[in-house]
Length: 250
Image (cartoon, rainbow, N blue to C red; front, side):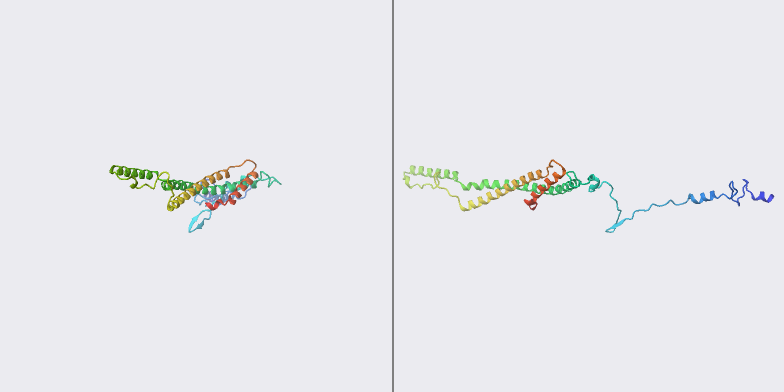
């Protein structure tokens, strides 16, 4: 008995014999818990990082687009009922309007910028040409200032002849009178013709630009009706732009 007591520890348990349960069999619950539970020095599991792709030698992460994609029309517009895929309120018409809206906005913004440049240049060019026309057009009519100066010079000669007792018939007469026939020079006609032609082209360009801006304003005006009617009106207007070949001017 003394040997048995010597083998026991201070708590009255033998460390070499595993404890028994109520049925008398060794209890291994403590050992199983120790195996399943990680110790305080165990490393936590690491998360798997998403593989990065290389673009021109730079590592970039791949991101997936969520459910807010503006081009996902299946989520943006409700699904059509059966046998109503081409109805007045079908998804295909709304999708067409969305795509055309972005296309028309980009196209018309570029056209507006070009028209604004046309208007500014036409206005400045017309102002400069008008100044030259106002000066050169005077050569196409009788210069009454020169006629007056010639007649005054002739009157002075008459007075001198009367003072000297000379004959009045010896005084030369002026060729410029208010009743004389006037014909402009050929060079003056050509120069003024070019100035008037350039001014006409400039004003015509400005008028065309203004009319085109009004046409664009009517093009972007949203018509009333169902989406199908709006699509038809938009296509009709776009075919008109192609028929007049407006894209060739920008």
